[in-house]
Length: 188
Image: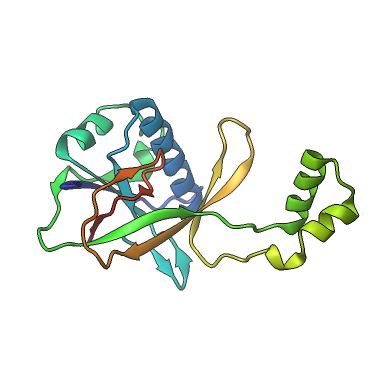
């Protein structure tokens, strides 16, 4: 269960917009979580909003005091220190609600889906169009962070859904981005 947290706040920067800095911060966190094989550290975004659609300018790390101190002992924030303010590790308020912060994936580009199907199945454009109608395309209305895949080099949007948990605290693990694989994090 996540008993402690650390807030990492983006500082105003004339050269980089907050979305670019948040993307760099999440990418660095991802690499650190992969390296540590950490599945007990979760994240949330206190400034999360659907209108306007934003993750805000604070990334909150959740975990036990030992897990968070182990993460922060790594040099994962190298290159970001001038762009962020990091709080000390603090205890979660005892009356905090809980939320689930998870990745949501959408079929956002029907033409890309059709090209992929043509490559994978050897179909013509007409066959792919018949198999994948325009109606499958979705326009997500969730905040996201723009990332680049280390394995493929492709840029992608990591859409984030943050929902208050009706069942309170839920034990579980987190993926290599700190997003829920069943677990909830405190929300305050």
